[in-house]
Image 1 (tube, rainbow, N blue to C red):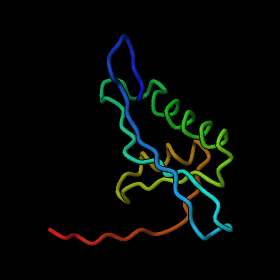
Image 2 (cartoon, rainbow, N blue to C red):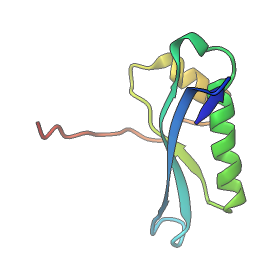
Image 3 (cartoon, rainbow, N blue to C red):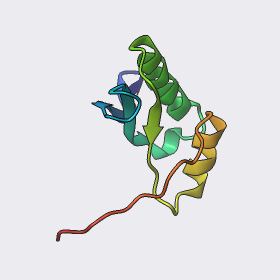
Length: 96
C-alpha cells in the first residue's frame, strides 16, 4: 500500500507460490496494482512494484510475475519499463 499525507493512494497484493517448476522453488505473483487516478504519473506504481521486487529478492525467490488484461497497453508499457518481459498467454473461465 502507498500513502501520501495519511491517505491511501495506491494498493497491490502479492502471493508467494511454490511449484514443481524450478525444483520446487518459490516465486512471487503481484496482483491488483492500482494507483488513485489523480495520483498517476507520480511514480507511486513504480515504487510499489519496486518494493515487491525487493521483498522477493530478500526472500531469495526464483522470479516475480504478474498478469495484465490484454487491452491495458499503457500498463504493459509500464511493466516493460520496470524490466518485466511478456512470457505467456492467459486463459479464464467464467462461472457466472
